Length: 54
Image (cartoon, rainbow, N blue to C red; front, side):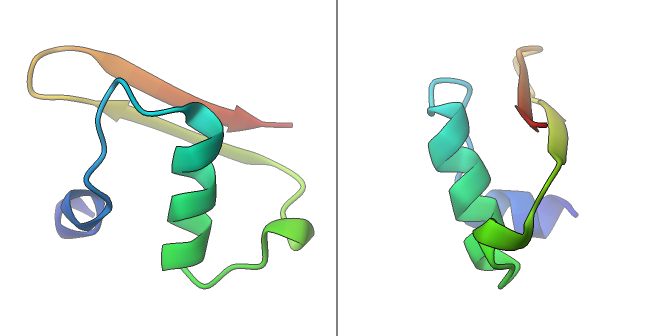
């Protein structure tokens, strides 16, 4: 999972919607077919980014 997350170049400052779309694109998942999405990332500096679509 870590190599995948590094490929996305995640940062706590990135917009939640942009991150979600970027992740789904990387996984080759059609965003229109996703009803729920949740991801929680803890960065090395201790900051946590939570991405949710319900």
